[in-house]
Image (cartoon, rainbow, N blue to C red; front, side):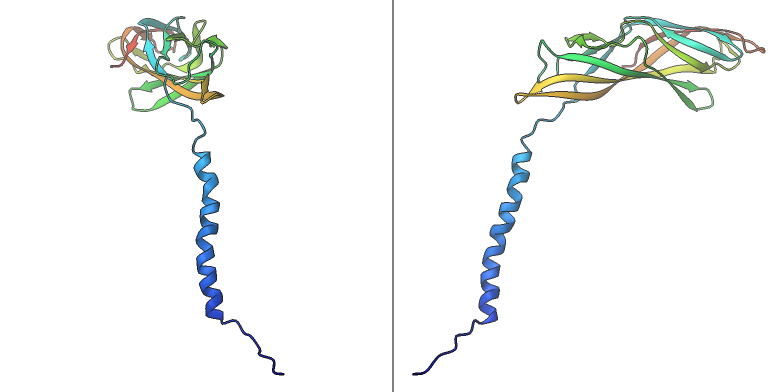
Length: 202
């Protein structure tokens, strides 16, 4: 009685492996396809600026710039998933001042902002006047003001419902200014006042 020794050719193993590898790759890619159905937050708030006058009293070239309540409104009509129960919270507001030498400085406040307000077509972002403290006001006059407000940006969170899921959607809403100077007078001692008529930049 003879015994035959069976061997497996290595090329046969390689062929089998080549057939199985694509199956493994396809299985690994499947979770990524399902993950793409997760909802994403839209960037949807449109700034609406009501015309107001911002004012500051200046001592030793430093003052607090005050922007009246009601100046900043966001149109949320384009927000996907906006529901009656949705709320908006403004976490901070940042003022950018532009100086005649081309430089800019930013000042941030967290006071007077809207917290947990109903998100509607026109949502007020500040429930009180906004005060930006410690703003630099160089010496200058109405005819040649050395500094002007450039913009105010709000960091907000909007609660939306998309694909059956509640999302807290962060967004930055920026108001750029097209303005005229209502009055600027800061003398050699660094004391005086400033006033700016703020309107939306088209």
